[in-house]
Amino acid sequence: MGIMEPYRKTLLHESEGPFSMQRKIHIGILDDHIATASGYKLKLEQNPKIAVAWIANYFQDLIACLEAHPTDLIILDIEVSNSPEGSEPYPILHAIPQLLEKNPEIKIVVISMHNRPVMIKAIKTAGASGYILKEDVRSYEKLDQILIDIYEQESIYFSPEALRILKKPDEIPSLSRRQHEILSIISSNPAIKTNELAETLYVSPSTIRNHLSDIYLKLEVNNRYSAVVRAQQYGLIAVNMDNWPKE
Image 1: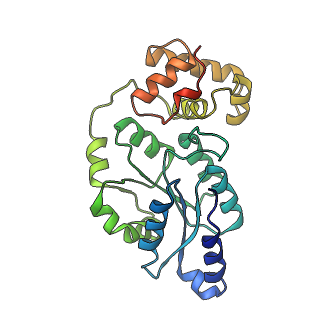
Image 2: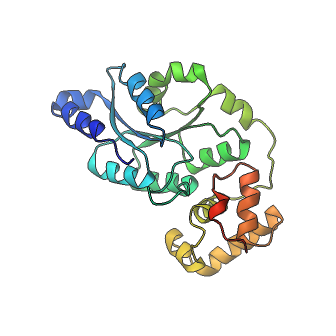
């Protein structure tokens, strides 16, 4: 299922009055579980300062929603497919900086079940304004105020459990932000070629090859497949390895 049409209609109805639109913080939600997304909407819209502008079930729908509707803050889940046609999760570590580059005023908050330190740190480095574990009941209870503070006060919020996890020692050698981004992209697109990856990141193919060599060295592997497997073991990426050809 793609974009949920009722929420498009809700936005159009709420934005008919310019006064109400100025007062409200418009929030978009990317989550492939309809019940979860609907729960966020129900919870958040109990606060009169918030309007859920749209819900997307696939990453390609998120792009369409941003183009169609004013959005102040986005809630992202991690394991969401790019499109209905594919099962590979979208490359979140590439998506966050790209979204912020094109929409510098938007705030991004990740709500996920992933509790590995390396993933949370990478998402923080990518530019997210918050990370909340789905099991964190206390943060969920005050989710509306957390998001209001992030948007209005430009604050950063990492739930207590996420902060505790962040204090754990690193589990893998340190990768640069660009190397995290490259891993995220290749895990989402197993067939991507080096020159295509270079075009996506606006760098030369030789730069990509150098980054890949450095990634292999740090992860103690010798090809893309093994690098993706190792990165998944460390919780850095979410990927369906059944779709990956072994090298």
